[in-house]
Image (cartoon, rainbow, N blue to C red; front, side):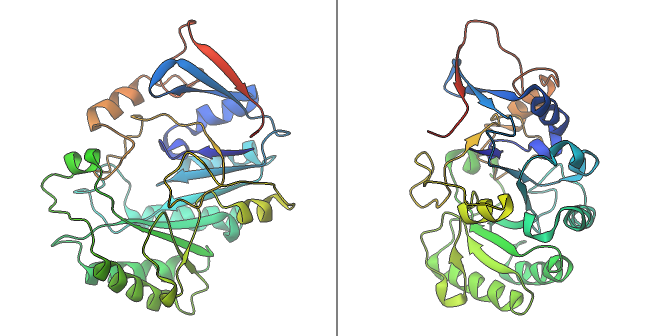
Length: 301
């Protein structure tokens, strides 16, 4: 089975000590976000894990613990965007994060490092010209350290609309998407980086940008060094091309403070979730009370 760590929170940045302890214990518990009494116990034993897919905005804590995950095939997706603290309120300076990504790539190989440039948003400060200028600079810095860049355009879900008030954002038109795609595609030409989209209906193949998958079965098999049987994820959005995985994250626990984030109802709830974290617990935040129904998952059947 494939482990997603995680769409719901930033495990590498905030909970990597916990994650390494869960590997030693051989499992992690995941509470159903709609019913706390329903708990999935996900096996993390090497014999059951085909690959781990990490999602993060800052992989720095991983660097000192790479030995703890050397028994597992894995790759790391890192979101690096041009936004300042007006949008991403609690991140290290981007140049420092880029340096960390370069070091990570040197240690694990560029095929296991995926740059995510998402979500792309537009307002009077973050214009197309700003995106192109910033993207060009980061492409030059990261092209020796990654093979692909995944882009997506902002979706203003209810949470995002609430938390981005005052930023003057809008859903991008198809024309704006096309203009951005053309500009970004021109920038990566000759860099060795392939552009892919994430869960986008718009077709950008004319610019050399394919519909990609974040949990990518082909990449999983390549990193695992053998064919891994996969199937399309049933629980993701219809436009999502990801294959099935088990996500071990928990909503309302990431304190990066990204105002567009769909995984936090509010900064206050995220802060509470973070404060309630116990490294020794089987779940990311809080703990089990004993009245839960625990379902064991040791494969993806």
